[in-house]
Length: 148
Image (cartoon, rainbow, N blue to C red):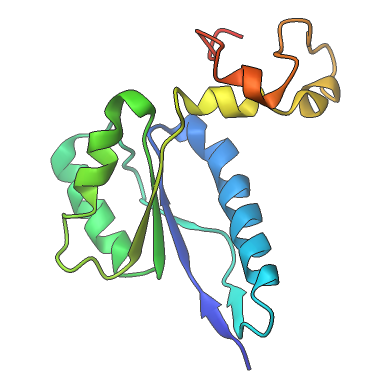
């Protein structure tokens, strides 16, 4: 019988969750598949703070992340590059943190990562893909990824 692995996720904003939830799940599944003989299965979708994100009131965020950390094994904490220190500081809220923290910080903004998959945009009715970068490497050079 396998053991369930419970993941937690705290994102900078609610819109980041739409991208980060499937990304985290896909990456963790890939890691588990590479671990031949691992007796671990994912226990559904990542758990989230009920109402808080990285841009929430700090007291509310600290309370919710503390509760979340006691309900999962691995806690993914996302922040954009300009506020990486906020994500790093959250790993010290509960000492010792009951869940293993994983800091998820892009070079710029999460929206830049989304631009790295032009095929996903091409499948959307009415999507204009002309402004998308030509390669994944070029994505981080986009100055305003949210605008694109």
